[in-house]
Each structure stands twice: as structure tokens, then as C-alpha cells.
Image (cartoon, rainbow, N blue to C red; front, top):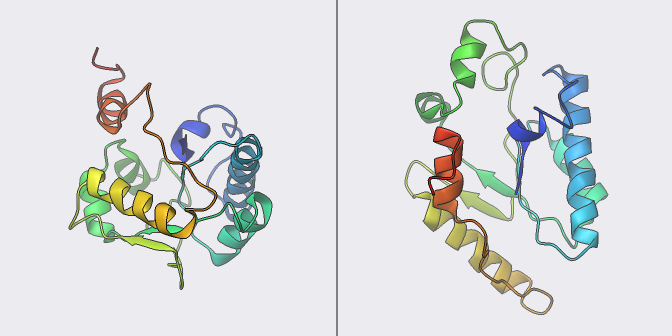
Length: 166
């Protein structure tokens, strides 16, 4: 899992949220994803890609055969209410310039492979829908195996507390 916010603390720490920086951030994430794909890994990136051009560029870099567009279709007010990292509050106070949905527009994808409406379903159900899509669309080339070193719950615990809860 390549988390866009985590990558912004290291690999992309020199980038802000201007249009140019956002494009460069997503380009770098796509190249890292492509490197892992080329080694046979199944890669999930969690990024906000506000423009169709960003998504098409990622598809080109990663390769159409390896790219699945998942639209996490969640109303803005729900995203802001959840705000687990406090980013919306920082953006509202003007501490993050160009934040998507507050100071920068978001253009939803017109034809994503998977749509997840997270106000209606939980994380495990979202993962199950993505896995089912992959099984159906890539069954000839894909072997889905459970991750042995971390679960979604452990990842959520880490994001909330900074520890693995072990």
C-alpha cells in the first residue's frame, strides 16, 4: 500500500498542493507503483487524483494492464467529518494551501473500474469489492493471497495511534 500522505512525509516532502506539485506528487507515486508492479507485486495506492489528466498519466506510467481505477465516492462532508489526520482542519485554517475540496476542485472519474461509496459500507466490504473485481477481471493472471504481515485493522490502529497495537 502506497499511502499518498505517508509518501508526502518522505519521498514527496518537497512538494505542496499547487497544481504543479500535485501533478509531480502523483507522477512519483505512479512511478513507484510501476516499479513494484514490474517486480510482480500487487500495488494499491491511496491518493487523491483530482484531475482526469493525473489518472491518465498514472495509467500510462503503470501500464493499462496493471492499472485499476477505484473511485472512493464519499461526500465531502463525510470526508471532513472523519478527518483522521486533521488535514481538513489545517486546510480550513489556511495551513494547507490548495487542499482538494476546500481550495482546489475535484473532478470525479467518469468511468472508474470500481466505485466504493464508503458512507454505506465498511473498510472490509470495500476490500472485498476490490478483490472480487480483481478476481473477475484478472483471474487468468492474478493470484490473490492474504497479506501475512499486516491486517487492515493493524494499519488502521497504526494510523490512529502511531503503534501497531501489539
